[in-house]
Length: 306
Image (cartoon, rainbow, N blue to C red):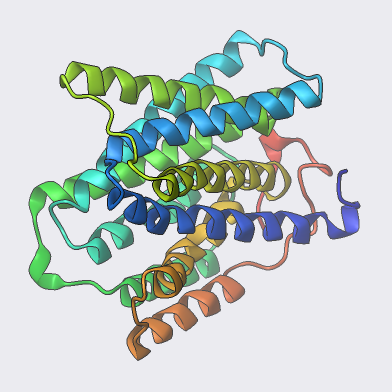
């Protein structure tokens, strides 16, 4: 059921927050699964099959399993390639530089989306948005904890690759959404990404390492479920409030990740992390005026964030 126009903006903001929380729990679940005999590539492949299965099931139940246009397929395949590049860049970066640096650089992408959307005519950037976006970025750096001793050129480049790739993924899918729907768009994207990881794994001559315990399988399947909820929520939000505002709100994702790590992995929160989190929340609260129009009011191609 579509929300009433009066509440549509808040519905979109709520979906963005749900997306941030859902995706944020994934790393903690994956980290737990690694201790049950699996590895990164296997988790990504299983995650992909879970997401594909859920999307197909939803489309079958809604009786909307129909071939999209060739333009939508091209856009979604390109976003799937970008999604794979993002995963490679991000997870490759955390192997060579501290997680704090990798996460902070990765979350340059809300700023990149903001400027990219401005240059393609989707969003008009204001000084207020730029200022508070920088505040949010600084707050993230404080919250996740940057270790300046952990500089490594390769890791920095991989983090920046991840930021650029996820920016491309968001804008490509946002372009496809008016011609299709969030479930179909995500289905094609995830199929593309999963095939890439399977081919990559075979090309390296490796075998998938499946979890050795029931609880390990539960954790890996939960990763797929959390990412399905996260991505679908995000792109439904994009369809309502636009990619710029939806992406900026997902800057909450690292804060949720810290919280889940504290709850599930017994990692203690520090006063500095709490201060950074408050800075992020303040920046997000002050960055934008609440938009009065959504995609339902004006065509996507001309929609502007206030």
